[in-house]
Each structure stands twice: as C-alpha cells, then as structure tokens.
Length: 164
Figure 1 (cartoon, rainbow, N blue to C red):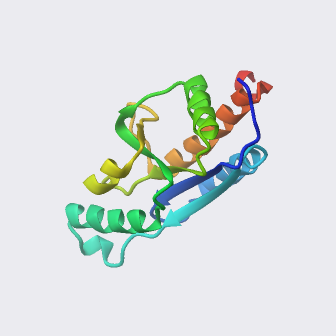
Figure 2 (spheres, rainbow, N blue to C red):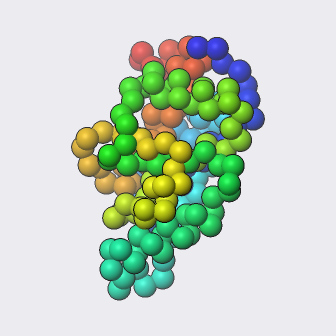
C-alpha cells in the first residue's frame, strides 16, 4: 500500500468506565504505537447518572444523545457492532488508508454501551464493523481494537509486525 502521512486523526470512543488495569497497559502500548502513524485519542464517555435505575431502552437513548452531542458533522463514525461487516487485517488497513485518501479529518471508532447503541447512533454511523461473531467483554474489545488498528497501520507501512 502507498502510505502517505496525512492529517487524519483516529479517535477511539467507548461508553463506560475507565480502562480496567488488566487491559490498560496493553491499550497504552498500542495507542503509543499508533501515534507513530496518526494522531490518536481515547474518549471514555461516562455512563449516564442513575444508569442502574434506567431501562435498557432509556439507557441506550441517553447514551446515544451523549454520543451524538460529542460527534461533529464531519466525523467519520465506525460503529463496532456484532451485526456489522467483518474484515481481515489487510481489509482494515485498506479501509483506514481509504479514509485517509479521502481526506477524512476524524475517524471515530465507537464501542457502545453494554446494551449497544440507540437507533439514532446506528443511523449516523458511516460504517458498521464487527470484530468477530464472538461476543467479547467491552474492556477486551478496547484492547483488540487498539491492537488491530496498530496492526493495520503496520500493514499500510509494510512493516514486519503483521507477520511476527
């Protein structure tokens, strides 16, 4: 692939609590590595107040409002969704490179809340991506996401990490 250093920023958004200690170090390692290719930032969107007393639907709606308030009109939103399309690592690399070639400013990867996201967020998503048909804990999804994006960056640059 033809790598061109561009000004696209990668953002990882997740609803919930801070990174748990068992994944925090790995997330930090891969985030640092990604920063060699792109500006990268994590945004942890706190759960709404009184979340434990809300119905599943009300919680998704409230989280959805918060997510949509954070998003800018020009952000390219990739929703991690078990019903989304699956890609292999080379496909993810091509996807990221294509967004950069299209001069996207912000590529936002969103991990929704425990019950998923509201219909409004799903409709707003530019792309729905499934990591796997398996279900993972949200904390592990963060780590897998960071590692896979780093792997894609190394593929774009034709570096050896992908084959090690």
